[in-house]
Image 1 (cartoon, rainbow, N blue to C red):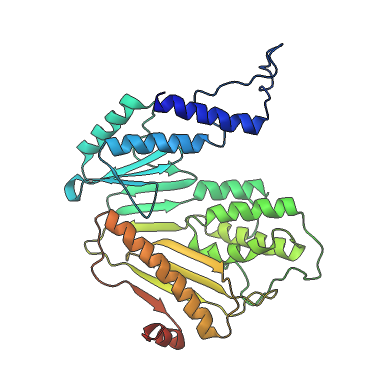
Image 2: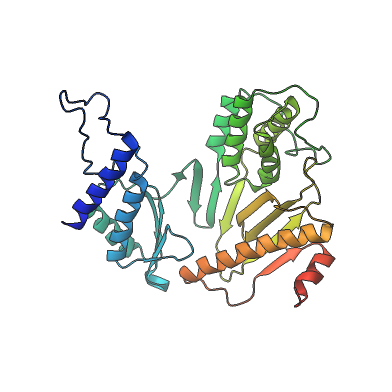
Length: 344
């Protein structure tokens, strides 16, 4: 039995278990209700379809000479320096970049021979992100998506604010106010979470309010709408990446202490840059309760270092090795002293 037929047979066995010996609705065969269909091809909507597609594209890229990154399973690299081609896979979309335009065109031709594809040309819009490429750099933003959020929640004419949230305000699960419409609240927070793909300035506020998805109150809803009002006044904000001759990876780490009223846990935050604009950031609640500000800051710095190690591995795959150590800037002297102590 050929490998492809064996895969189809295995596939049909998995589907057979899931369907419990039932034929698809609208395709029943009278007198043969005890039989099921043999699946010969992966289809959209089935749980195994993404795995089958990834296996197919992975095999083909390897045949073309690409090397898959050990740190990022969707990143493929071929060549180096003047002949470098980088391919990033997102479901059935491919982002292709490189230093040799001729090789990129040859790669596209090879892909067209095997797959049914559409060449969208120079990237200008991808997954809600607008990409504006010019001679002096690249600017990414989500202006169109932001306008859709304002329209969806009927806040096109709302007054803007200068900050995404009041830092002195504390939120808890039981704040004594009336419960809000959880469907509306979850939809609003979900939209704002996707907006943080290019808006790191609202990452902390959105992360904080996302903790109350199951117990949203009117106070939480008003705080979420304040973020929307802030976004309205900064709708043109984004990140610009300029051309650099020499780049050096560096990061910043910070933390609050016992910021969560309900469980007294702290929040970690970090961001990384090559010098022209941030490209990686995070804000999330820590897993354990910190006993001091130094401990909270040290935990945040640890998370930042873990991210820095992963980024450095990605840069090695991209032939952009960082020869110098990566600096992580921390604003707590006690945490810095603990980190520099070889005993720890």
